Image (cartoon, rainbow, N blue to C red):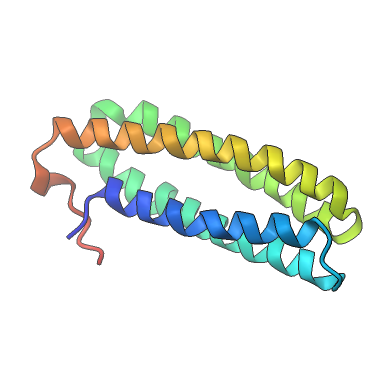
Length: 139
């Protein structure tokens, strides 16, 4: 069984190539539908990932380690903002791929910094906890 942190890091790794694909598509794909499809695919993956964190991993963690609930809830608040920002990128991709690419580049940098902070925080929690306490049971 993997820890919450290991599971989150794995999910972050799966998002990285989708960011590259979406940015490449926005940068000048000959098919006008390609940018929207790539951006929407990335959006679906981001929404699914954030739902795992918000509805599964973090509530379980703050139950096990209530002293970290406030920090975990702050991550959830950032997730709400990321969802809203990404919805705007999807809208832009349909009408102005260049503007969407610019917004997605900024979003990607912000999201990557957020991922690093999450992973560092989860490693900190894991270092404070008995290993068996933070195993997810998810393979």
